[in-house]
Image 1 (cartoon, rainbow, N blue to C red):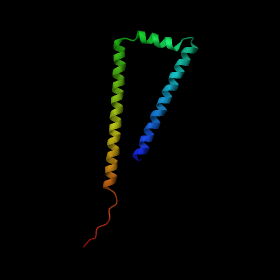
Image 2: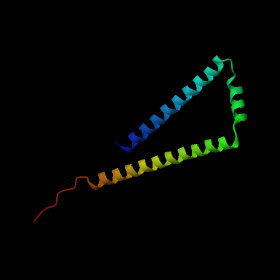
Image 3: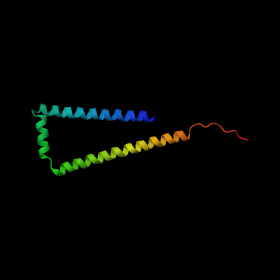
Length: 99
């Protein structure tokens, strides 16, 4: 798969994931409303009940996820670079005249 196609595939998958998360957030807010709750007030209460420790854990988990994403991107770049180098090295060569 050419590098551009892989990039387009990654972007498309990321966009699909973002859209799925947005749908889940919308369903959560719909659930709060169906229970007679104001979603903004629920967020305020949850934020007030969070502790510095829970915030630290969430931040650590987020940073770990970001490191994993960065590592995956770097591995993908290395695979693409290796694939491009291998395809250039194995390109058809003009036959040499043999004596």
